[in-house]
Amino acid sequence: MNPAEWLKRTATRYPDRPALYAGETLRATYAAFDYSAAAIGAALEARGVGPGARVAIFMSNRTEYLETLYGVWYAGAAAVPINAKLHPKEVMWIVADTDAALVISDDALGVGLAPLLEGRQMLSVDGADFATMRKGARMPAPVGLVPSDVAWLFYTSGTTGKPKGVALTCGNLATMTFTYFADVDEVRAEDAILYAAPMSHGAGIYNFMHILRGARHLVPESGGFDPAEILTLGKSMGPISMFAAPTMVRRLVDVAKAKGETGAGLRTIVYAGGPMYEADILDAVEVMGARFIQIYGQGECPMGITVLPRSTVADRAHPRWRERLNSVGTAQSAVQVRIVDQDGAELPRGEIGEIVVQGATVMPGYWQNPEATAKAIREGWLRTGDMGRMDADGYVTLQDRSKDMIISGGSNIYPREVEEVLLSHPDVHEVAVVGAADPEWGEVVVAFVVACAGRAVTSGALDALCLDRIARFKRPKAYHFVEGLPKNNYGKVLKTELREELKKDIAT
Image (cartoon, rainbow, N blue to C red):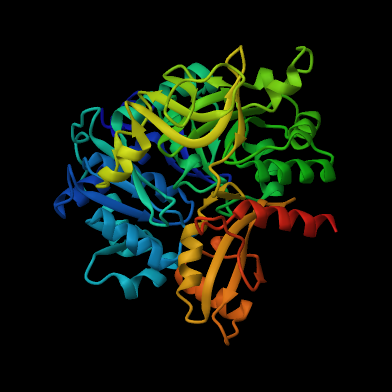
């Protein structure tokens, strides 16, 4: 079913309920929200955008983001939300890969895209054309879609360095939404979802639950994550739920402690996207109470693999509470989760292997990439690339992420992508990129660089190259210039040795 049907139904039943807020300022009731989305849908349809088309959305967090999303769905097209942190060249790769019919952006981000559009259409939500669209004649109803129709194309980096489009269907999104109610949390009409993390990712994908319940949608005035602002909004606009990376949770708790606050008004904080250190979640519960829920998912199975409910996160009475607190919980209702060996055979409980998942939240495949799909989904099971173990009670503990991926501040960074950029410098002979532990970001990117014989290269030159080619958050935070890289007998770089070398540097 078309997600826009949910918005229309809620607006029909509860037209006067407050829907969209910028900070404490009400921007739209549900009736007004639905009208804007339906009018945008009509304008897109008039431009020839309909079922089978893709519309790229590249903008910062704002209430217009939701109006645009639902406008795209009203027209029956697929939305392609793009991380606002990405470099314009990375954005245009995604736009070209999806052959997007239109790019909808804002003035600040659109400036960088304009020179790269090459004839493609772009519309700014800050412009007069968009204002006219959202006030024009509306579509009477959303275009009909079936569960197998693609609604959301989520681009995630891959080990090849090329982004891959995760095709999420109407059925995937519906199952994810219903499973949230079953396993993660209930949503009530008086609640609000706070979009402090990027709406192109986990934060935005939690909009559906709150649309269904007719709850409020709150975008901070800052447009992002400001702990002091969030604590203030909790008191004035609560009860609030939000999605946060572990590093965001730690920063929020630190500010709460410094201000002598306990997070009043913050009802639920769902955390995911990287390792949560035991000391950090213990401190979080001590300071702010039983507000925290952990989920484990991937773009390929959005928010939907396992869950550690608030009761377990806050529990200190169970004989194995600490072990459970360090897990990512148990399988969500709509999926099966197994631990398998390299051949796909299920391993006994307690043994470490790859985490695989099967169920209605798992994507049907990557956008126009059958080879990558065949590698990721084998015999109906999604190979997550994450190593872990499952105990006798079904609790899954992540042993390690896929060997190469770096998780910095909740964002996934694949070394190969950074390496390819660095290797394009004429004075670089070899390079290896690894993650180094960091108390603030979880991990930071570190590059080991071997210069060409007789040449020299500087960190400044490599920084400039990265800033021209990839998002700022992906560039190395440190460069180590070495004479050679450690390799095995087959010539493969031994990144484990590089990581150990970084650990020794920290220790000394």
